[in-house]
Length: 354
Image 1 (cartoon, rainbow, N blue to C red):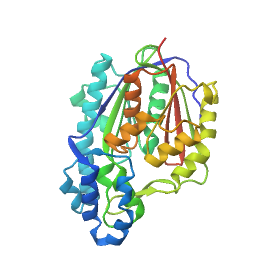
Image 2: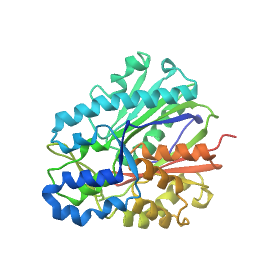
Image 3: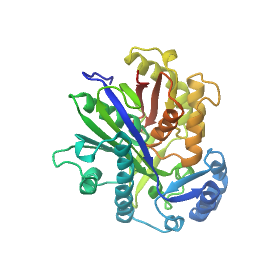
């Protein structure tokens, strides 16, 4: 679905937050070896995955020894609630401070998260600490997975465009590490253990222009019969990752046509896009994006740097990349891109304020 809006929208600020605990990839490899020791043959055959991810370190919400224990749904989700509250407050307050906006000025709260369940939703849980108004509009969104950073920002911009002088706070956070599973010896579980970290990002949007970027149109493209490529299986003792090895070749084959459609929805051609700012799902996915979009190898440098420093944090990751693009000096325009469960491509145009 392409965008249709009546008012321009500005991105006033972007902030990120990560847990304090840092895990190097070497440490992660050693821990995974112990976690999957009951399935040593499978792990030994897959151990090279840890060294080929392009990841040097990541941030996780619990100390390493926590992951070596057995945890059911209740225990995992309790960790999600406690840690998500803290990351939400940190990222959101940073974004508000950067924008020069007080919490009570926010009209709408958009929250995107798919790695835990919170009812009441996260923004309600922290409303008292943040100082949100009693009549603030709340829009929690679940199920977008890795596409959530782009799709959520698109939704937030549409809500900001719905009326004059509106301020929207968008927060996306994912705690992928708490979904590590030891009960199922699958290649997908080992790959997920090699890739995923935890983090949050927050944006403040306002009707009008200016800020750090002007937000254009967003588009989602859903491919039929692709439900088994990416997602979660809801199981005991927790969420089970669906992570198909066909993702990189699928990206290489289909992403160029998807980008052409996203550009067309914005009245552009692919060659008009000066920078693609992509969710780095993994080293092979980044390489597949460059191949599909006919970019020189190494063009997606910030994507590789974020993957190296944080791993794949799912939805927030693309906004960590955007933060680096903005700090470097964004070109005239950039297209945010992310892939997620569905299987879905989500794209959003941003332009430099005039």
